[in-house]
Image (tube, rainbow, N blue to C red):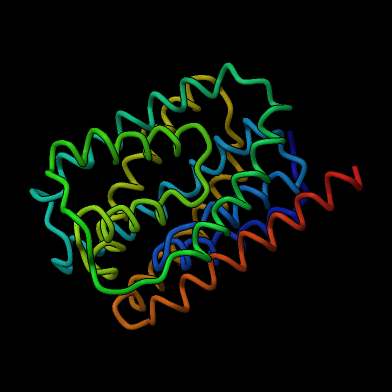
Length: 251
């Protein structure tokens, strides 16, 4: 399918905002995926194109964080592999789902994410720390599966898992979420590409926006108040849910 120049331009700036927000708090898919669907892209193609454009955003953020030594490859390698494998399986599973079912799942997940963030308050780490291998298999891989099948909020889920289950501080957990989200994006992207569910031109334009947004986000990551980020994700998810339902009824 072909999109108009005006719509593609809007998607470029949408991706730039998503790249910025996703680098800071995760949840960039809360912006880009509904935007693609509101532009008239079918659900499965929207999922594939969303992976295409978001992969470069998370990749840019990962590279910058590694160069700045904010994260270490030897520490994240097992988690990276678990996230990659989980996402690949999730992307394979979604290929056989009726697209009309995705149209029902999307608004439900958007509301669930908003409710989850309303109840979560960033603070001191508490709880029992899970061992690395169990954490990778029982937590990171399932989140990767979710990202491969659907996606919005994955970066936030990785971040919250790090805080709650690994006792990481919110800033370090956010930084660690970037390479994990990159792993899920590239794994899922490969599967969607094989099945031909991508809009390459639209995705390429959005990738440019993602690079700019991710670059800006990495410069704010260690300066912004995490409470403001939590509120931002809540507002985004509810706003996108409202717009999505409105346009569905209009159609």
